[in-house]
Image (spheres, rainbow, N blue to C red):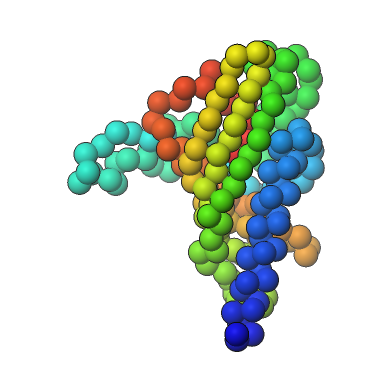
Length: 179
């Protein structure tokens, strides 16, 4: 195996561990630690999906900066959402949800400048978010994520997150949780 190939395998393992740790922080409601994983200029975006004909795929998702989306937030608005949940009087999170994030198919799409000295890594993965609250409310949200991770002061930070749900009609009562 070449040095570059070994570096890429080790980098992939490092990125996977980072993403699994992030999922644990969210599942355990350790939101302040999760917010610390976000770059100051982070963008958290989830376009809406449309039902389109097979030959009209470019219209399947709403366009960034031009159309409506489920989320289009930065670190400041994500912090405000977390603070609202932490008050304990957030109507949609009282009582709190029980959530599990499952990640799979983690792929490194692009590494800059190189696997041996990465400053930014583009990552794609699949997710399943399971949420249960009260006694009978259960949600399964499945989709794909595209992340841009940036190394800042020796630590990975989430600079961009694009969330693509595999459903076009939201069946959950709310989206108070994070992906």
